[in-house]
Image (cartoon, rainbow, N blue to C red; front, top):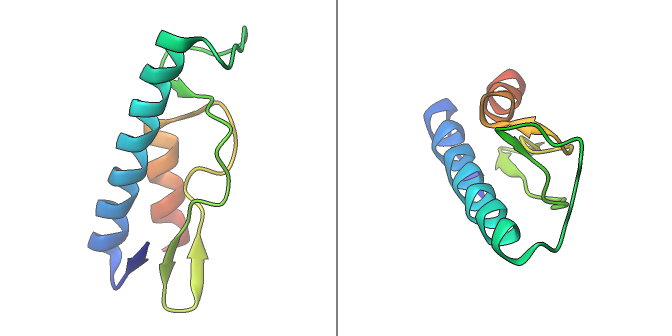
Length: 80
């Protein structure tokens, strides 16, 4: 996804979070990935290479398992 400013980075990060929520819900219904150490509110979908491009910089807000929604947003805004 491309972004031109901080507000768009925040908006696009929200899209990533909504996708992760959908994927987590689907996974809970279909039980494909099971992580015993997952805590409430953490995303564990093994999805890589989702980034937001602003100028020539790439921001990877969701860059590891066990991130929460707040951690993903903070990572996106820290890089911007």
